[in-house]
Amino acid sequence: MRRKCGFVLLLAGTLGLYGANNVPPGTPVSVLVTVESKGENSSTLSKDDVLVKEDRDSRPVTEFRRLDGTSSQILLLIDDSAGGGFDTQISDIKKFILALPANAEVGVGYMRNGMSQIASDFTLDHSKAANSVRLAMGSGGGDVSPYDSLTDAIKKWPMKDSVVRREVVMISSGIEGLGGGFPPDNPYVNAGIASAVKAGILVYAIYNPGYGHLGHSLWRATEGQNFLSQLTDETGGELYLIGFGSAVSFEPYFTDILKRQSEQYVLTFEARPEKKSGMEAVKIRAASRGVSLAAPDKIYVKAGL
Image 1 (tube, helix red, strand yellow):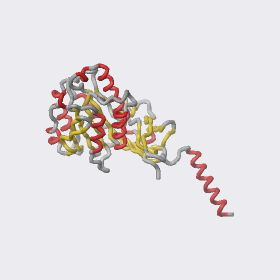
Image 2: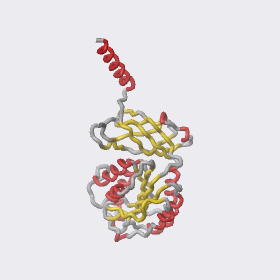
Image 3: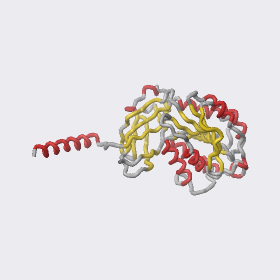
Image 4: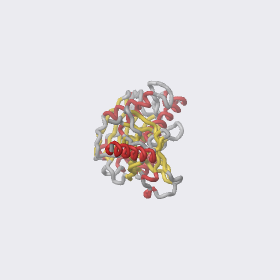
């Protein structure tokens, strides 16, 4: 009887504690977050300043750590059917690669026919990576799905547990040549997003018109920009564009990317335990009104044991 009473009291205490916190134990998930501060010192931010909701449920934050000096892997993924003066941007691309931190592994790939053609494997030799950047093939590039190419590049990605920051800089018109529907329901775009989110990869996108008719079709260009916006929003990145034409220079975009990398944190929180692995919607924001956080709109949660 005493043992039974003791067990009941222990169980009641445990349930009481659970009820008070109203948060069940969860599955740890880590994401890359960029702080966009407005006049406030972001270095003073802590895990108590970050709010996470999975659907309508608030989730406990366990870590919010600045990524100063952290090793990284950055892949430049270039549309091989790029037009609109892309070739004049090669100098800016090479300068960006050479300006990256010394401990950043850089890779260069070209998107063609839904595949990724790797021109330079990830390397700490930035000069070697920069020298692999070449002219786009234009009409010979034949890319039908930059998002399939992204998925293919991620499949080939040499994942390292020691690397926390993984990023893609995609240069593309964003046009999905296979069709399949509009944002946010295009299956090819969503597959690319899911691949990036599952691998913990943040995607930046630079809009550049494609070669030929698709490069100046207004509704196609609008659709492509919407797809790129969805891709970057849902992975925590940023889209860079000026209207529907090609930029005079990519340099301001690359400068902003380097700045954003200096304000990045790894955020770890307890996601809701799930019986089946899959994608879940989240909202990540700062408690302070003076700080904005760029973070993924979705996370990948592994099934509980």
